[in-house]
Image (cartoon, rainbow, N blue to C red):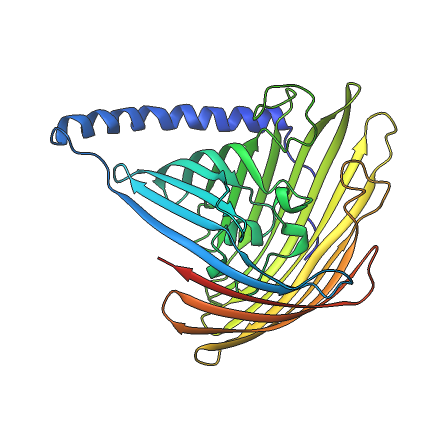
Length: 365
């Protein structure tokens, strides 16, 4: 599928449209809250549903001098609550600790308040996973739902050397495009953008007036259940040292087919960076192809994963390129328990043909 033509409305216009939508959202939301206050018995409050996703890993990197080791994966606490029939809250808190001690790092990965007007318009405010491509919005921090061990390199989390703005703080709108049945869906997002450099002490705030925007469309043909093709376009003006700005555009295109038995996924992304000082655009590319098939409780899988980074690229030029072949099998002995084992053939800018093994036990409670 060809990348979308970059003839999108200016970011300020998109931000204004979403702001108007949020104002329209607040009126019925306030009325809804007043109704709830009058109708609810004193002392009652919305119920919270909590699930936890954990994992234990063993890995051998296959690189000289790197020992094999056991490790703890993320413990993701996923919480949801329905405030009323239209308003809901979602929160995802991740705890990380080393295998040797109990020093825990806590990250609030997602926190969203969502108002559902109808199937055509769902408005959310807070911290979310950006709708760049498919994988980032389909798979979050609960590794149980991923077939393989680990995300594709291009979709790695920011604190793990990721090149994408995986998380954003801002506003988003999702829904079904009217008069398309349930086939065509959209996403529109306005956020602060990724904070690449600490230019000030205001942690968590945007460092300039420009806002990141992301627009995406996805087609789910009704006659082919499980199939989806889509594309998205993300842009932001990134502040850099010396009062300079780097224009960042990310084009993504994908095609997936997922049923309980079969999984076929392919994505391609182009990451472009253009410093205003030089006006020269530098393009980088990343993507993957993944396939798996379930045979009862067993699911063999394969992934080809590639990331090409131009060393001259601002901000991500030192991240390095990589090419990985992953062959593995997943075994689900019981509901909410999975065991994955995979072989990895990795080549990077500095290492050629490293052979690694990775085993992961995932569970939900």
